Image 1 (cartoon, rainbow over the protein chains, first blue to last red):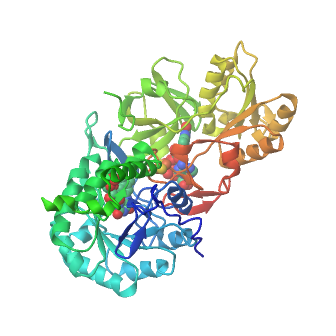
Image 2 (image 1 turned 180 degrees about the vertical axis):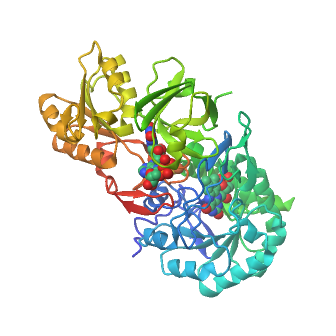
Image 3 (image 1 turned 45 degrees about the horizontal axis):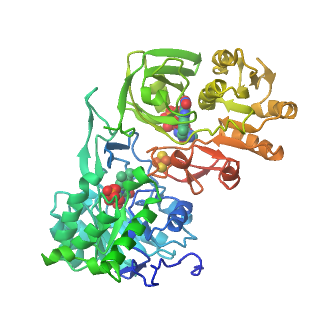
Length: 317
Length: 274
Ligand SMILES: Cc1cc2nc3c(=O)[nH]c(=O)nc-3n(C[C@H](O)[C@H](O)[C@H](O)COP(=O)(O)OP(=O)(O)OC[C@H]3O[C@@H](n4cnc5c(N)ncnc54)[C@H](O)[C@@H]3O)c2cc1C
Ligand SMILES: Cc1cc2nc3c(=O)[nH]c(=O)nc-3n(C[C@H](O)[C@H](O)[C@H](O)COP(=O)(O)O)c2cc1C
Ligand code: FES
């Protein structure tokens, strides 16, 4: 049973209004800060800790039907102070173990799913649909695992098939996560909207590489990985801006958010909420509280009643 | 420009020490790890093979650091097989460190098993330099597998400190497990802190003993690690992120960990029992 009184407390500002609370695709959150998939995303006890530390919502690690060990190390390296390159190889405990992990979940949790064809999804949804979760994010954009993620996202027919399959078997909101692949992201977003998805997350990490110059060797064991963090923020902003110009379903902004200023920028570009990941490697999990404080200060100073008053501001110009 | 410790630094193995048939120490120049605190670890890149967390070992040479590797699975065996002149990559130091208060700590006990002794040797060196009395218990299965005995003896010269060895087969020192030797010593000495690192079930036993005898304890936990910087959660135990919140936890934290000595997560993140 949900313990609504103690766990789902609302974060009110000084005047008592829900200045940060947001509502999109049937999902209601106390603030727009979500944990990006792949960060601290496998443990219920850590979800509880993140929620206590002020996060708005949580997206789990992308879960596949079977457990995956991922690639050998190095799987995560840093390319500069605020950016990372990863090829984890979608390591995850698998649907069976993860559904058990979150069987008593009380946090606002979105389960991220990954599969190689539409046939994987009925099995995945069956494992999670009766649990206390807000909805699903489908990862169609992992840049470094063959036949899963980006290769799926770059095939519009497969994208449509997956969305239709999933929408047919669940009533929960379905969010599709896109990245920068070979298909134009705006075109892809249109396909996603037309296929019936409820929202889009943009963007995933971007295919990238790093070489150790002493040895000439690629550093990641998988050689190619996904770039995240500050280096990709302008690309994320551009994608959210262009997508929200062309589609009407809500878009969650993701990529390189390190501060409350970055959150405002994404929302002004057209995001209805944001996902945050890499900054945790620099600032730890207390960053969510810090960003929330910064947002409240800014909104109060500007005299806004709710953060969504800055939504799409950049589209006016 | 400040150094980004998350950036892989290449180092050359300049010296190696055979500690036992299955354990080797490699020394390399790295001023950053040389200045790390006792208990911290590095992520060590074995080029094109693996990246493994390794505790930072004591190095007597200024600006140099070291790691001690037990030949175990594929990754550590490839690392063990490296030679002088070979290149490794390192990043870090990561994790917290053993806390020592000069006011509160007058007489402490260090208990280690296997490569868990690595951070304790650096701690012993730190204690020696700060004139804090300690007793180090080295646990091993057989005489052949005793690690760092000579080095530990060197560290205690001219001090009131002690090194005690326990072997399971009785081929050297006290016969039994480290936990067997401990009770007698605890009764005789008046320890105000226990520091431990080694196999988790050993640490769990020592933790129970610390509770029964009302002695505070700090234990360094080991979990499967991928990032070392607190973003992937592969290392989590209950709601703690071992690479970032730890690796060293105190009595109060350990008391709240239902998974301590019971549950760990495998490479996929699934829970398994010890
Ligand atoms: C903070 C920290 C410090 C460490 N310090 C040292 C050190 O100073 N010297 C040293 O020799 N080793 C140390 N280790 C252990 C080391 O990182 C490797 O886990 C170990 O060498 C096995 O790696 P492998 O690739 O050879 O094993 P694999 O081939 O990956 O696996 C062999 C077996 O070991 C198990 N295993 C792998 N990694 C771990 C793990 N982290 N915890 C428990 N079981 C595991 C696997 O499940 C498997 O059963 C440390 C680990 C941590 C987390
Ligand atoms: C270590 C790591 C693991 C990730 N795992 C996933 C994943 O499983 N599923 C997914 O959709 N995105 C994954 N991502 C991408 C992030 O969710 C996010 O889209 C990207 O990191 C950009 O956001 P950031 O700059 O705030 O980190 C991962 C990123 C990193 C760095
Ligand atoms: S190893 Fe990634 S969080 Fe600890």
